[in-house]
Amino acid sequence: MARFVALVNALIGIFLATLAWADALPTAKPEEVGLSSERLGRATQVLKSEAARGQYPGAVALVARKGKIAYFESVGQRDPSAGAPMSKDAIFRLYSMTKPFTSVAVMMLVEEGRLVLSDPVSKYLPQLANLQVSVPRFDPDTGKAVYALVPAERQMTIQDLLRHTSGLVYGGFTGHAQVKELYAKAGVDWRDVTPTEQLERLAKVPLAHQPGSAWEYSLSTDVLGRVVEAVSGTTLGKFLAERIFAPLKMTDTAFLVPKDKIGRLAQPFATDKATGKPIELLDVTSAQKNDAGGAGSAGTTGDYARFCQMLLNGGHLDGVRLLSRATVSHMTSDHLGDIKIAGTLARGYTFGLGFAIRKETGLNAVPGSAGEYTWGGAAGTGFWIDPKEQMVVILMTQNQPGPARGYDRQLFRQVVQQAVID
Image 1 (cartoon, rainbow, N blue to C red):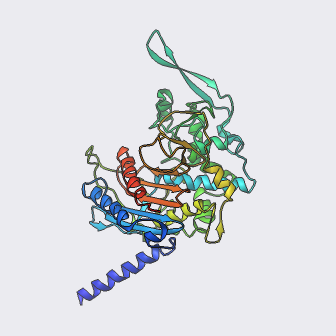
Image 2: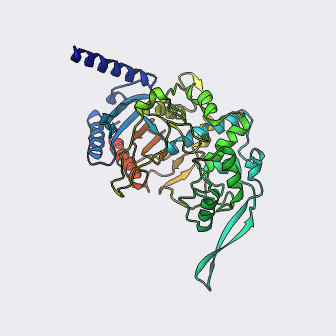
Image 3: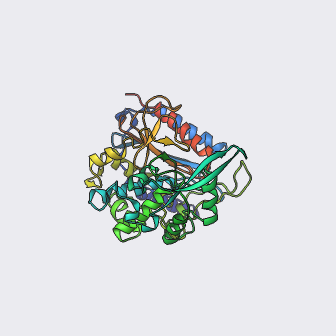
């Protein structure tokens, strides 16, 4: 009897898991869409090998081509402390893979005529008017950098926020010593602050660059979330839920994982094997003080595939249109030109309105196509969309943020690229 009950429970679990990603894209055999089953098998072996050596507890990976899922696999463990196996419907902390959601939300408001990309941010967030810029210079007497505060030559714009040329930074990443110090003193962050506190603190610190003069990865997308809230009159989470997630049937994507779904949340190892320190990721099971448009959401691989396919389709999916083809084309074009890169942007890439854009098929060490757009999340998630190959690829893992997560994505990318055979 016990064995029968266990079997029934297992079948129910499989049925519920199937329902959880039943709204994923249509499926096809790899060869039907120009991919090799045998070569995709290498990707599975790589994922299993990396999980076995402790690179991450487990992974979910998806490859869709020509609008159909040809590869959807889960390996390893969803929760290493409980020994729970990874499942395709696992929910992952997306961190910076939240940014494309916020960027699309902004462009929807642009299409409705409620925003203009050249608008100064202060039109919607008056706190961010009249900012100063910290300008370093070399002091020959001391051999050290000294800093002067000068007025911003122009105000940051909505476009600057979308392409990370606002002059804002991430305090933990920037190489600008004075701004880094002042961010820390003022408590500028995206976590554990209310929207009002976030803007008040940003208003007190200088910019690291003159607006429009340099690309540096930053809190810009979090500020975009505040713009969405100011224009729409609702929270970012509610706007995304009603205008993007619900229409695209992204049923498991949100800023808060509800109690009945916590059992599906992917967990990292207890400690980082490189440092021995505990791994502490964002708690998405408790309401945050703000809906962080740059890092705060969680979701499944199947959900994110629907979002990506919408973009690849030119702004629509299954009869639902969120953006026009022209808008998607604008978002996925080069918006930097000869603007200086201050910080890390992969070789051969520029930045559009919410994504990194591959400029050249060559230059970068990892295979890919010019025109591909991509981004990743700090805890081990990543995606890329390749219009030339009509392909969407997503990798979801969950572990300590750091350089190892970039290695994970590069390794997976190259074994997927070699599976294209048409």
